Image 1 (cartoon, rainbow, N blue to C red):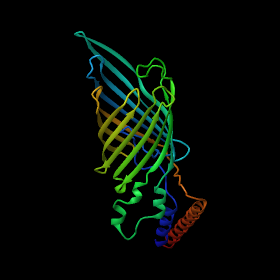
Image 2 (cartoon, one colour; image 1 turned 90 degrees about the horizontal axis):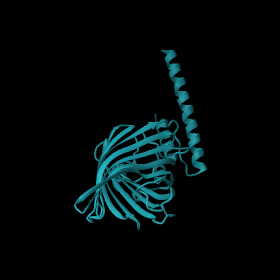
Image 3 (cartoon, rainbow, N blue to C red; image 1 turned 90 degrees about the vertical axis):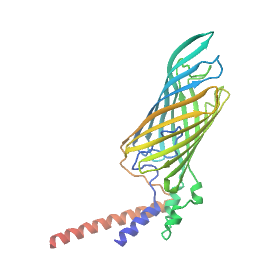
Image 4 (cartoon, one colour; image 1 turned 30 degrees about the vertical axis):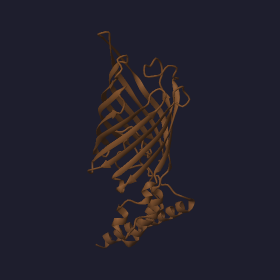
Length: 328
């Protein structure tokens, strides 16, 4: 028993599984992307339905009510650190304009956003923490806030916006294809009960109206299957600038299914915005092989040696059990 425990600690100290988790890892209900991927060969669908209004204090600008159909398809490709993401929103909108005592109403539908991109994890601080191991003498030191918690996991994201045809959500002269990029950081505090995700985004930088945005999402697990979140998002652009606050609750139904409720408000009065919505995230788990990350070739060699030793130990134990069975 002691040998097997020692082997287990050796295996843990030299390796760490990078991305895949036993439970679904959803970006919903917030707008930010987490630094970690869904895991190799995992296909995940994250969808939402929201209703809201954009109301203006200026009478010459029409008020708008709309239904948002939000979608995100994520797939872990080739390696644990890499993820493909299709992300977008299709909108059914109704605009109302009061002019001269008469009301004019118009309806239109199209994609407000539709982006295909890839995310890659470039730094994971938990590899070093797993290698260093826990403090075996103090539960308090292992569970209190530590300076190392301030070091985030870091991912980079690159994508293309794909909006074709006559689209009322495009600005005049906007091309059908434009770039988008982001730096993503993620900090886990309190043993993972608190998670802070930050996205620093540049969108459509090659167009007449580039947008620079920041999204900061704080989530907290209040029960084993329930989490709450608060989020702040800022847009900076000559075309549209705003600050938005979101909040909501997510509930884990099972290891592959999550449901959520969320809403948002902004700080402007033209437009004055609000949204309320629900969402579902579902994972098709085809992950069959754990991938381990190593800091150097020496760690990989030590891992392979330990893996081989454990294999021989299991074989020896099976032979021993067979001999004991015959003797009985």
